[in-house]
Length: 160
Image 1 (tube, helix red, strand yellow):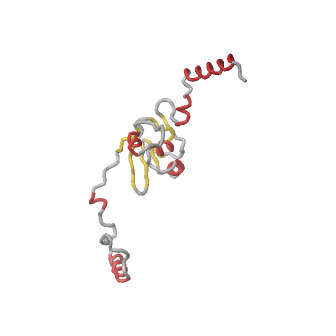
Image 2 (cartoon, rainbow, N blue to C red):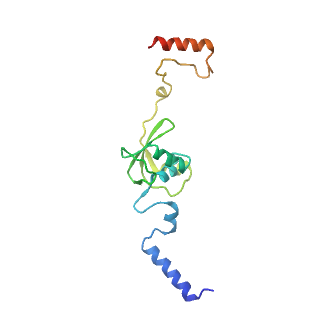
Image 3 (cartoon, rainbow, N blue to C red):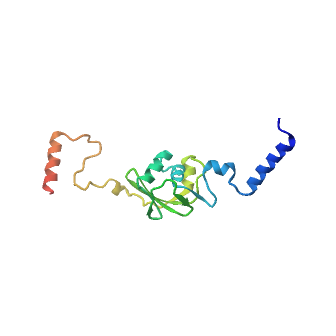
């Protein structure tokens, strides 16, 4: 059994650690450092840009993430409040300004409070614009027939 004096000494030691600003157990679990900074891979995951922290680290190492226009390649890069993050995800470029570090991966509404979206909005005409090679198909027309394929090939050959 622990004596009452020893238990009191242990309690005093914990209280002084919290008073010194050691981070405490809540900050250590959430990964948020003092001053509103956080690892980029954790923040991308908390902000629901990607589905897993591993895929966030993969985006960073593959060079698809920029912070303040500078390409980063380390998932442990420290992100500060006010930094502008440019991410390429699923053939779409997202520009996000960090407003706050994340504390947990919560619902989408909570995740949207972590950033301000600076990405340009896609217009409906830009999303449905014809392809660069000039070949368009009606939505729902399905797979092209052999005759359609020949006509497409002829169009492409004339364009060269």
